[in-house]
Length: 288
Ligand SMILES: NC(=O)c1ccc[n+]([C@@H]2O[C@H](COP(=O)([O-])OP(=O)(O)OC[C@H]3O[C@@H](n4cnc5c(N)ncnc54)[C@H](OP(=O)(O)O)[C@@H]3O)[C@@H](O)[C@H]2O)c1
Image 1 (cartoon, rainbow, N blue to C red):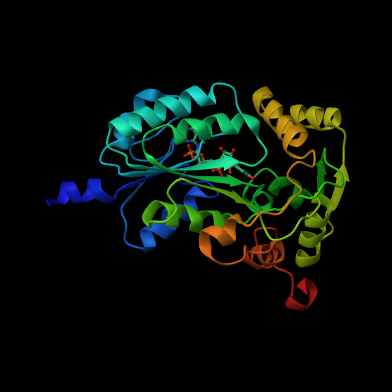
Image 2: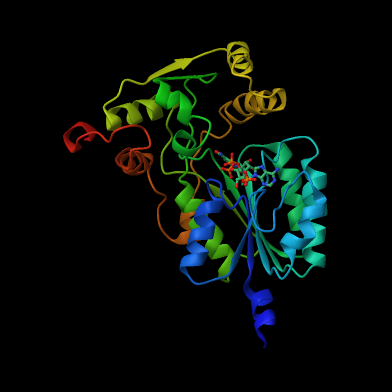
């Protein structure tokens, strides 16, 4: 086998490879000495979901894809994009697709079906809200401001750690035994958003209030911060559809995939507080 055959044999395209799960997947694969390509607008070559002309080059010599869509599989037009991407991928020689999906999202299940029907080996990671939304996503700014206002009340969400998702993605991309598996991924515990914010406040020693607001108040708050209308629609959809109680159940997906329990929110909070991303790390006594 010559060198270029070898590259084709192994290269993994990590879509969203600078994002919450993709960055971790890319790091884990690289640590194992496996060749990767970051599939994002800032990648080389760039990959843009909105520009199909970028896809073929990103797929060149790729054997497996970690498929994350941006911003969300529930956005209108996504199923067609995922279908066309999966067709291009299989035509170009991709043999394995590992799809990141969202739990409790009917629209996302249509894209899951596209991946199942693609002809490639597939694994689906149907995930709960990531813990890392509080430190790397939409909830970081509110946490830093000291007030997290969201249109959600007492519903419990089993926040899942992006490190667990990445470990499962890498197992599915590189090992046997995950083909044709749909893993529903949750953390080990249900927390309300108020409880999650309270844990962060305790660990950082900062005052951070959780304020439940109505959907209308939330939408106008986002609009006042110039959040684009389609993103407002996505967030309000997620809070209406995904956080209506349908996901307030734990699953054994992490254990099934990795043979161990999922990482707890408290461990995530402790490590993240120590990293300083939420401000000056609290002294150890205060974070206990
Ligand atoms: N966050 C959650 O709690 C959660 C839960 C379940 C499922 N999911 C799913 O996870 C996926 C990712 O969501 P996320 O919010 O966590 O985002 P993310 O993966 O943290 O972030 C964005 C990534 O997408 C890339 N990106 C942005 N626009 C792009 C475009 N037009 N074309 C190609 N790449 C683009 C960014 O890189 P560049 O800026 O370089 O392009 C970055 O690598 C979504 O499909 C979502 O449904 C998320």
